Length: 286
Image (cartoon, rainbow, N blue to C red; front, side, top):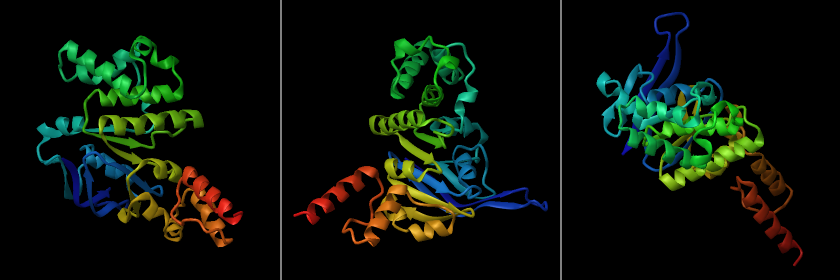
């Protein structure tokens, strides 16, 4: 079970003066159960790549397979692929339209012609997976919820389709800090509890550092770097060259090391930094 992208090239406006190579010779495998982060500057190819993963777009060259099915080979299989790879775009709450939360989440499963008992089960399970009390939320109007709650309802609607892979494109865009923390806590729990493969596209270095197992860095349509968050963020100078940064805490740690603090160089979260700095302070006062 995996998603494979082999020698992928995607060209916009081929044959016109506006021809643009969005992706160029991209090779990537996304493994079952992993939490993958995709980062890159605006125009690096992130959004194009994730649209290829569930067949919204077809590569100009190369092929993508989802659990052994080649995307675009048979149009009859596209609906199956789109159920398998659930894609949540930025501001998904703009797609909420029903009078109650339960009806909104049920919209996708209803279009699969499932039995009503199965639809109800999926709605309840999906809302609970994103942290809601089903009985309290099911009859509420989605338009009366906070921004973070609306976002979670929209994600529940995708989960109700039972995808094997959940792709999130800047899922916290526009949310306040409380909404961001709430949503990411639920995504992290979802990955752990449901063992779901999650692909997160984000501009936030801090969010990527906290959440993912592996990072793909896209630059000018190519995979520029790949590795664990610690491996990627230890290459601060290279990231800065391509217009990206590192988490602020990593910058602080780097500055402390320059000033003689004997702390590990691969720290990328506040929690790790706190532990290391306290250890160094205690060592200096022994």
